[in-house]
Image (cartoon, rainbow, N blue to C red; front, side, top):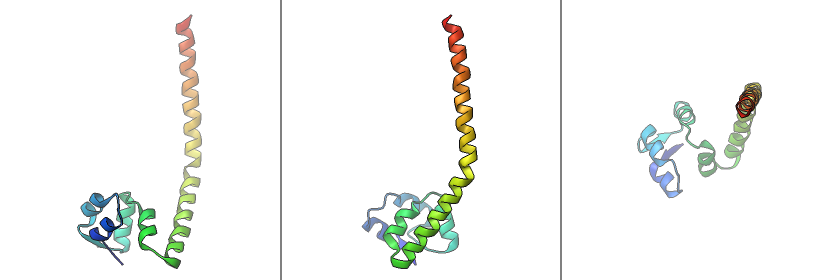
Length: 102
C-alpha cells in the first residue's frame, strides 16, 4: 500500500508536514516505514481509519488495543510510584509552609 501527500491532503490530514519530512511525497507501508511513523508519532489511528478497510482495519484496532494495554500495564507501577512521590512532596512542602506561618 502506498500513501501520498495528495491522499493525505484530500482527507484533511493534520500531520502533512511531518509526513513529508519523514517520507517525502509518498511512502510504501513497509515495516520500516510503519515503525518510523510510530516512532515519530504520526497518528496511525487516524491513518488506519482513513486508509484501512474491513478486516485490515479490525486487525489494526485489535493489535493496537493490545499494544496499548501492554503499555498501560507496564507503566502502571511507575505511575503509581510517581503519584505517591508527588503526594509526599506536597505533604513535605506543606509542613514547611506551616513552619513559615508561625
